[in-house]
Length: 142
Ligand code: ATP
Ligand code: MG
Image (cartoon, rainbow, N blue to C red; front, side, top):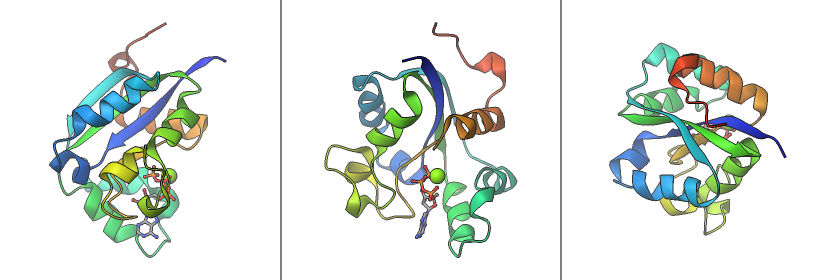
């Protein structure tokens, strides 16, 4: 299977728990490599653009205010089947439905504050990487 890139965010609630190393270990331990990383606070307009598909949902305002509430770690993950693999490592959106070995089971607080984001398709991954990284910020890992 071809190697591909996906986009990940370690969300503000996980950052506060001092568990960056644990989450990155789960990515690396499951065969994904870090091709780019940026520790930053997302501006409100960027968070709105990023989650534009959820604009009409009742939780949109809450989601944007959570995502801009503190620092996050933006990552480009790289490896075989990276989009699907990352979603498996993350676990279900609702941590109560996530499997015990996953990031969200271990580090999410609720369906809203659920520790990590991961692109849901290769097209989303490309759109989201373009939003947060310039091409030269992403390392070519072969
Ligand atoms: P993400 O896009 O962050 O990786 P996801 O793809 O698992 O998560 P989506 O349906 O895309 O889930 O929802 C985007 C985000 O919106 C969720 O991660 C969560 O933070 C928030 N969210 C989703 N459903 C709810 C809900 N019912 N109540 C509150 N927040 C929600
Ligand atoms: Mg999503």
